[in-house]
Length: 320
Image (cartoon, rainbow, N blue to C red; front, side, top):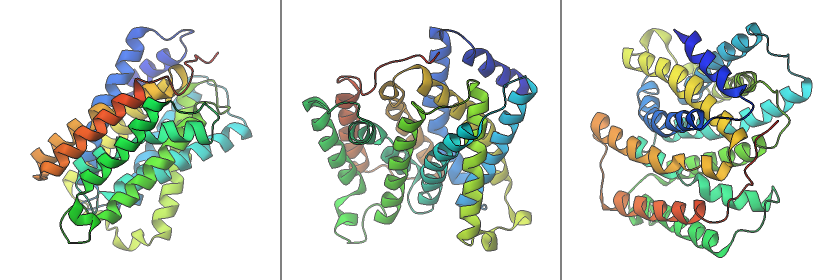
């Protein structure tokens, strides 16, 4: 069942010039599938601790992809490749995804997705501060300021003033830290020396990131909370979905897009993910949609439009 999917991604990544159809399919994967993974994570962590769940998810997916690439004749990676993919795996998965899974223990899945959609704000900041991609223009700066205001509205004045009303600020802080790690990791990945075979690269990132997540889960004492015989059917099904669709398909599509189009364009998945996540969170978990959610979401979307329609953060390049 998995081989046709993997062969599709192999065919995509060996194209000398990516076709428009391949790019559209990859964008649909990160737009729609990733929007649903917030609900999948919510189900999975009901009976599997968050860091261990994320580690198992990515380690299994990474191992399958890596072995598949080698079986298809992909060149073996160098030590430099392993070093770079470990850095990327740590930033994207240990920090980025680990924070999302942990935060969903404290805040609704839809709110988690809405905060994650602030990624383009961090892209704009860090591309300028750390990656020498040029100073943001006035339009981008206005978008960044508006975006932060939107996050504050989304959290709600009750949580900010510690009145006990609103979204848990600790959960917000955790997931914001995760978006920072994800943004830096994505920017680093767009220029790092990586294996020429995209499937190999994705598998290595997930293998290393998954291993780090498992280690972090053990260090955090999650093994004492994990009882395999008590894992629910919903958690198992969600974990399988996250491995196949959220990791092997969508994460592979994301990594490929980061190498063939501008990261600022890839970050537009943040427009669509929250809409899907909020709807699914309401449908499956009866998560509330109040005025702060609506107003904060609209403000963040306005900020994203300003940022991503300004001068591209990264010049569009297609690696040789």
